Amino acid sequence: TLNGHLRFLGVKGYWSPNRSLDIETWWKVLDPPTEAPVSVFVHLITSKGHALAGADGWGVDSNTLHTGDIVVQRHTLDNHTEDSDLWLRIGAYWLTDPATRKIVVWHNDRDPEATALFVPLTRLHITQSP
Image (cartoon, rainbow, N blue to C red; front, top):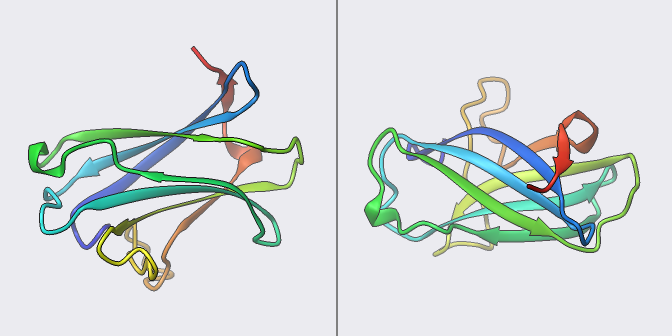
């Protein structure tokens, strides 16, 4: 969780008509993160960790959130390739400390030091953008 404030729920992808990749991440508010601005990142990377595209943002005023709210954040990743060995790197961080991004975005007993979630693009159900 983002220091007990947000829990990652899932991800979905859409191909846009211009062939960019739109990624939705779903987050549950456990405790509204009001002590500092928050940002979510989605990066398209190769299996070797090379970044091809990325987007950061949080399109919600955290002061308007309530416990239990679900936030869907949409990011557009441009300049992607059709390579079949691509991954998404997903995470969240406090905007007051974007250089470190040392925030665990979900509870993971196997790796409590993890700072991002990695999802193989091949495991995502990607549809045409509505």
